[in-house]
Length: 422
Image (tube, rainbow, N blue to C red; front, side, top):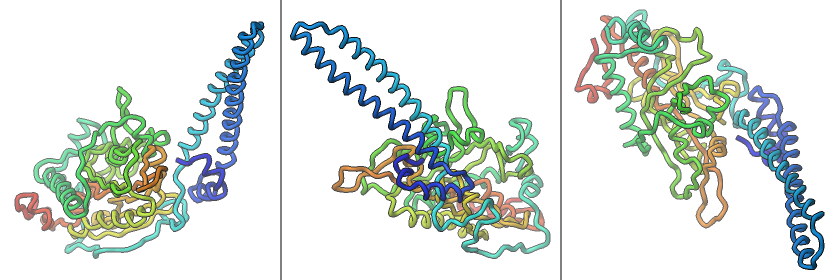
């Protein structure tokens, strides 16, 4: 979220950044709203000064025994005018905030231009996409044949886009999450966190999910929101706080269920586990000084990649173009894992640097040593990884011709030494 003051000083930069996002110019509208609000504030201050001056005149007049009825009437009129201006100021502020809250973050200079995923740029490849025998099956064919992945019963329970995992596949999903958490906490310095799965409006607003993406969220009858990702509660851990510089960076990780309405996903990935209303994910969140966030972005992405490397899963990293980035992101790397059953790479992680966009919405700041003024922190988030999609990738890449599935070496200690699921 941007400040009107920054837009006054950088109007052309603001509009050009929005244009790269495919959003119409807003600087003139924002500045007009801001100018009117400042006019109202000036008028309010003038009425207050006049009231104070005339109140002193009333006191002096009464001390001289003079009639003060006319002065009292003028003060009462000024009070009414001031109250009306105060109400207008609040209305103008709300209107300005509504406009600013609906505008996305501006893309970094090195983000490729483009309207959709076709303009995303490949950064690097790892591993060789291959399978040791003929035509590969998709994950749902493998899981259903094993009798451990049930979409029909899930649909009876909850409707479409749900699944019931059982036996070794349920245990494999849990093993994947434990493996990821152990690696991120013991090797990469993230603090494991168990956050709430329900949040208030302010938390959803802070990460940029409200107001623009309300239809993508599940809303409870008591006014809370089911989290679409642990990014929402983890990032908001620093909301409204002033952190000491030496406490940064903060790095959090959490394994949680996630809930998404998938409002715009009609007809997309209707079979299988790739796009569901409920799924599990290990999330990474970092809070840094502004000068550290770009290096932290690269580090976070490498932490997510390391999961796939140790699982022996081929993947590629792409940088998203302006038209394909999320609302709050300034720059995003997507990690796409190779799925033999589909014969293509599919997203398994997005790692985004949001700069101070979310921090401004949350009022999350820090203070440098020896300084009185505060600065906004930078926030970053990334999946490391989406656990359900990682399970999909393991099933498809480790499938055997007889229908069984090999267990990757790094997961066997989490499965009691189990070498294959069959």
